[in-house]
Image 1 (tube, rainbow, N blue to C red):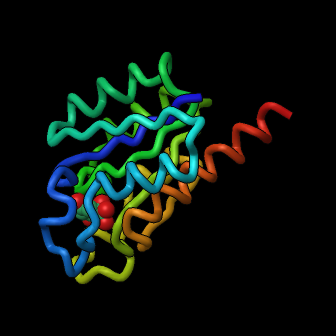
Image 2: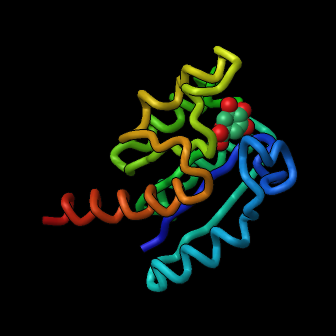
Length: 147
Ligand code: DQA
């Protein structure tokens, strides 16, 4: 069982950028948490600042992964190409995660995600722990599918 965590623009700076919004935890902290919680599952993490590279990764994920967790950063608010890419790999379950509670953010453009309707569901506002919840959810969904 393999799950992909796909992160978009600026998420490489987690732990450094706007710590008051995104927290100070680093990706390595999440890796440790995931390994501890899900020792038998392969969880790959990929990040790019480029929309086309993210789209290529979504398209190719269909052959390699049973579930995908996406945080497409600011592209979440306007990338119809990535939303269509996610729709094109159906029925692979895709879950959207945002570190911050996008609905409580000051800038109104963050209150809407064009990615959300293409996903099974969205988790936001729980920092890196949102990814743990997303893995748990994908496992439940796959279990249901296989019953
Ligand atoms: C984010 C929220 C986006 O609005 C922002 O552009 C990001 C991070 C989040 O994880 O909270 O880059 O996706």
